[in-house]
Length: 422
Image 1 (tube, rainbow, N blue to C red):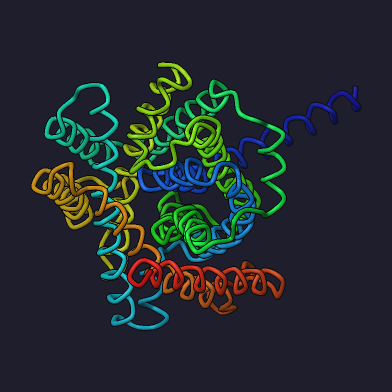
Image 2 (cartoon, rainbow, N blue to C red):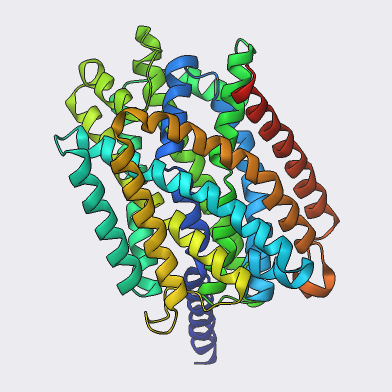
């Protein structure tokens, strides 16, 4: 009788540990899914159309750096229960926190506009006018974030992310790509290595590892009230998020390489145009899946980016923050959230569809400018033993983190220089 009792207890303990790990999942997954927003899908579509399979190796390399930088941000949230700008205020003072928050807000507003542009472009493929698409997207996102609990918001974000993954996996399969060439390009860097090629490399890395994604994962882990005991589960969460980010990107590049690049249609302007071009080449189902993926990804980004902006602002000034607070308990948080969404919607309506491509590109440039600042603050804070306690980054993590940060700084500077000079 004792042996079965022991076995039952062991199985029960394992189930409890598994449930505890699964309960931690969320911040890394949501951040990973949201990294592939409207700007990301446009960048990957352009990469596949213009360079075929040649840039797939960049996705594998960026996945490694993404994991280590996101893991450092998650550790900060677990160890301190605070977001990035809040910790910056405590460690470096209000001026640096305000500088970081304002800089992030400028870039995030551009990204919010880009998400509305993606939503409008995707719905436009199905005949929905831009003003109606913008209004619907703004209202849905505001209602979701102001009236939902943490659990509801997280589950919806993850569900949308899974839907995006399925849509682009299916579109790649329907495009009938050369899987052997794709596998080779994933592990062996090759290509023309021209100035345009390296600009595409920088753009691909920059849209995969975003400054708002780095801040979001820390704030979201703190908002979920995770602690040091959740490190194992959160590492799994970050690892899955980093993998899924590049998993989706891989299939977007493959779908466009197998159709557009293979037939010489390399001059596309955005993801919506790529979706239209896919229809005569791979069938209407591929076009619909590609468009639905763009819509879902834009909607996900539209929820996450303004949420990150509200987190950053409130943390910098010590105001209540979090989606589990009621509207009357955190008026600044929800007021800023509504403002960022409404501003993005109004900007799109005033500007019109014709100029949105330039705005989406400018948003990527602003992200590239911001990324070095965010990563430097993250690495300095993650290596502070007094702040982090037992979760402080060790020598290996710091080495990899700073090396990745230095590489991203260099790539960001190349992107900015190329954007204004080349």
